[in-house]
Length: 201
Image (cartoon, rainbow, N blue to C red):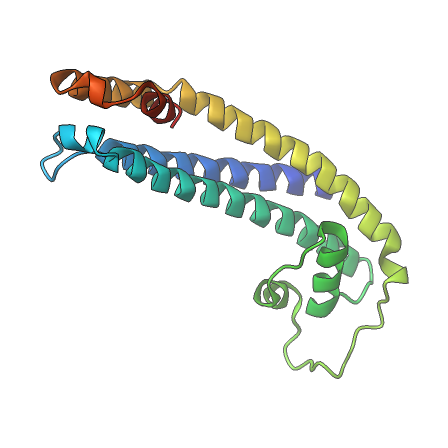
């Protein structure tokens, strides 16, 4: 296996782990939503919209966690390619890394992250890299091609996690508990639209 393929597999593995942790947190949020301090379902939460609001916040946290994992994976792929290029003789500084990221992604990465990977103790900003944008044209195209492959794998992973979640026995059991709580109260006070949103969580 090439260094690029090995790195890609490692990146996807860490992405999978991050998504699993995000969905585990989402499950815990779902278990607590609409319940009192004793863990009992609150009928009022079902009919006053507070359960739906709790789940909207939980969904936002899930989306943010997935988005952050995607950004980390992309950054790692770029940095790995730059480290390999540095090993082949290119002078890759934090500034070079930032510019490459901007050109291949259309946005930058944090200077802190770039410095942690490419900073050289004692080197000042005045000691600029001799590596120019022209020197990086071929490398950047290779990185773009690698990101296409990586993004396809990340999309597949994300879809697998989403499907696994919708089929999760724990998720579906909680939704059944919500239904039971409503049946004990007033079904008419929870609209079909509200149920559709809750069941889509």
